Image (cartoon, rainbow, N blue to C red):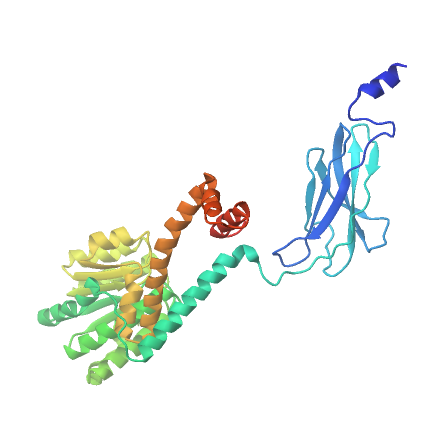
Length: 397
């Protein structure tokens, strides 16, 4: 009698024992590379659920399967990523949920409908990235066409670039050499490529003014490239007989050893002007302080944000960040190089407009104002439209 009374007043129990989970659904995970299935269910109506075992069955007619995951009694979903047992794309799978009570009692749900995993052609969560790439590519090709048609592509003057010729002229007047350090990265890195482009201008100007140019290299691959660039600069100036390949040397690939060697060369040769362009690390201060101590005029530029404060404090003129690449494009005077710089500038302007707009729209959405505005404009489903706009601005999930 007592047992029947307790059974009647217990809200989570029934005369049939533990209630199973209901409405088990399984679907392919969207926006992935395949091999992942989402499983969800309605919790058991019984109290005292210890856990849910997620059972995967291979084949539309299978009745036995393997446990691929567990969830506690408060959870109602599981993402089967095939961690324990891989999921094959294009194969039918069904799932059932096994509710396990505190006393070990088990109740099995009805199996889900068959589901197949597959790879998505498009990751919609990265749609904003795709749009940005398309917009940037369109800007780039438009500017390339303008440049090749002869229309000027304006890039604002860079003070450090305009001062380079004066620095070489200073060395010619003083009868002392010019030093050029192309950074501590390989020739395959963007900052080194830009530095080599600027080296061509310094080399040609030095040749025209009968000024010795010395280029100590850190990277062995940069060394022959620098030699060729300097040699071509002397040829363009009509002074190829004055070119000395020994002045473009390879020192070492150890950063502080390189800095010490260059500092020694600066002390002995006492160059009138030092050019420090490229990517540098903390040993840059050794180079710059030694150059300043010898009385050299120093012009530098780097893409290393950590070293920029030291460039600004030790160099007479500094190219900050992307100014290094813009200066190389100006010296190169190639439509594609200039178009790349202009496309970056246009894209930055677009981002400067879109970012505040996105923040404002997100704030309006969170405050519920965006939905009211859309309703006032006669949108079909203001809540859905507002949610879609906010999700797109957030770049998906």
